[in-house]
Image (tube, rainbow, N blue to C red; front, side, top):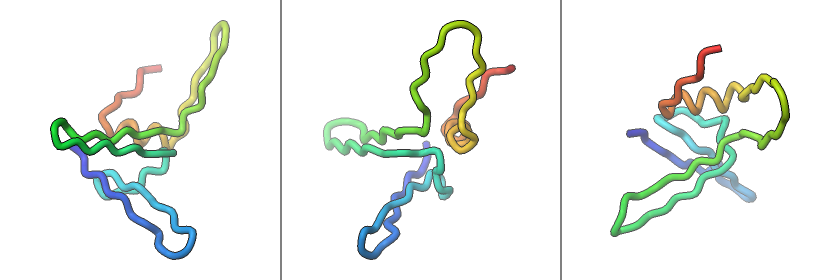
Length: 80
């Protein structure tokens, strides 16, 4: 289980930052919270990953910030 914190930067035109387990999530582009009294609460995270289509052999790279967030959430990168 992870601790999710949303902090406002305050002031006019304020934005928010999302912390997971106390660390800012730089690979995150959006967040949707679903709070339901009859079901499990959900946090849907949108990560900085662009859709890509290709044919043939290719090497795929993930932004370091996105990879760090995925690892924090339990993902294991495939071996090269």
